[in-house]
Length: 85
Image 1 (cartoon, rainbow, N blue to C red):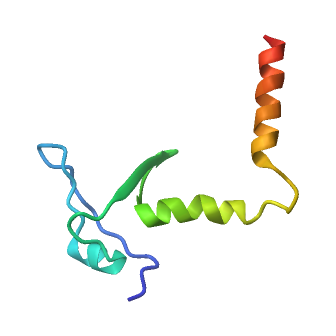
Image 2 (cartoon, rainbow, N blue to C red):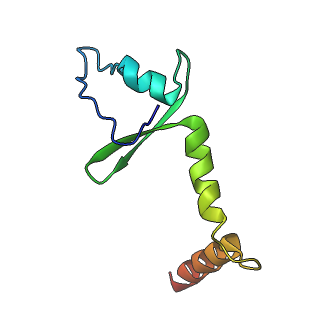
Image 3 (cartoon, rainbow, N blue to C red):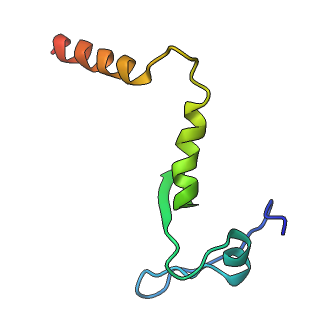
């Protein structure tokens, strides 16, 4: 099933629940008990399957050149900020 461009409108229920329509659940392979990660991106509420939420940052890490350490860079920035205080 082609998921590109699928769209549904949902309404938040009286108990703040949200029902994902069957067509969307089926397309995404969601079943009762499936885990979802919610996050806000500007004015959008984004739902990711938990396995997708873990895969996305890993894909970003693939773009880091060999020999570059983002952790070392972050620690250096934090140390500089702490020294400036």
